[in-house]
Length: 153
Image 1 (cartoon, helix red, strand yellow):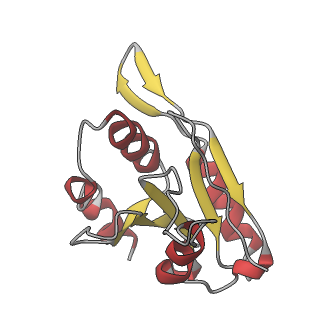
Image 2 (tube, helix red, strand yellow; image 1 turned 120 degrees about the vertical axis):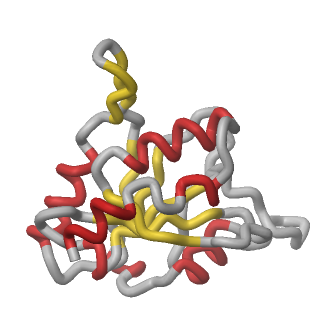
């Protein structure tokens, strides 16, 4: 059975779910990009803890399957809270060796823009930090790195 972690932490780690297992070099590029901290200014940077789910059972899973697993009903039959405001999918489209990207997926079922692509370098750290602090909403991150993403196409 495919399961995903849930958390009740006030500051959970970034959750990255690998859904493509065909390109090990691409996966290493994604992980290396995630290892780059988000530089706020010359004196301050943020590098969030990351929880990687690397279970081949999630191969080719899309956002709907991921959200279903994260919010599967608990004992009372109500959809469960997963604890994350955003999760990131390391999918086939993101396994670019030059500029690896992730599919950012909102866990809010009412989100009008439920997913969009972000660069694996830096953006997940900034999104996770600002969403956890409730400084910004999910939709505000769409397009943060769109110019850089377009250059890699």
